[in-house]
Image 1 (cartoon, rainbow, N blue to C red):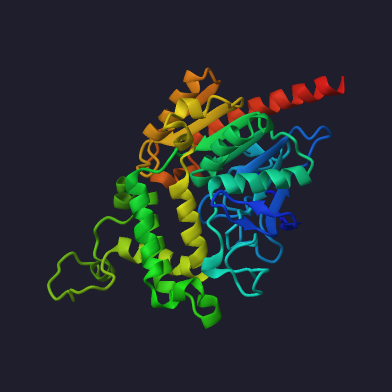
Image 2 (cartoon, rainbow, N blue to C red):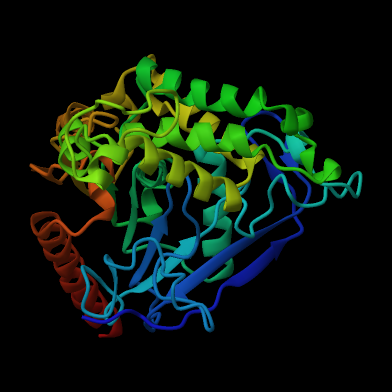
Length: 392
């Protein structure tokens, strides 16, 4: 199996306003996207990949001159991979409000000519899905073979099945949830407060001051990253070794300089991740996307009844969860499965015993990859049969 190779991002501009769930609207906007593989004659082999919090349209491959910038799901999407680009035409879209090219807080507000900053309207998962559907319209894709995503991307896939039931044949939801728990919302709020309380945030208009709220972003990423890993994974990778003692080859603490610096390996790792994140991610984008996570609750419109919420879905479903994922635990995926079964939907569910916590959906667990590969093999069989039937 090889990577898709060199890829190029594309931009699609929309002049028609996009009404948002908040009551606001975007007068005009641009979506960044990438495509991999070849769209077949009847456009029946298209697969939409929805991204999670800090990812983008760059799903697979790499950019010319920057071979280290590999797509965030390159192990999943490509020639001969579980989502095989020899079979499927795969689309990755960067969501509105992001900082990777689609219109977001860093871009100029046409009403003022200055960066939107904190004035960029709040967006929801449903708003993103509406924008994705408009892009699909432009590409001439009336129905996706599958819409797929992990974590926040899984929420978007689920929203697709509810909002546009006739526009996808399969819905693939990995390590996701029908709504965040109070604990998850609490973690997100602590991360946001770290950004909002950074003096360099300047009420969201830090661009005009030539600064970045790096400390706030760093702490926000550290908080978030803790929730992506399992306790067992942290223990195995980092343990409790004191860094200076490990460097000296000793285990005693006599003469050790105690204090509030970086003593443990896990502290070093989290600060490294935080520092790296603060160099490339936008603070306003972090606020927007975590709020979109918090607001997602499609059953809210049906008195909290998820079975009623999913009654109009028509897709077939594949869901996967991971036993050590305490952020989006298997119990939450089972809620979706049970609601779908109550509606007599066709559902495949995999609960995978993996040690890596929430991040497992991005990693190379052979059972997980094998299940996804087998499922997309079935989708390909159906698509090929349908194409032959249509041609006849």
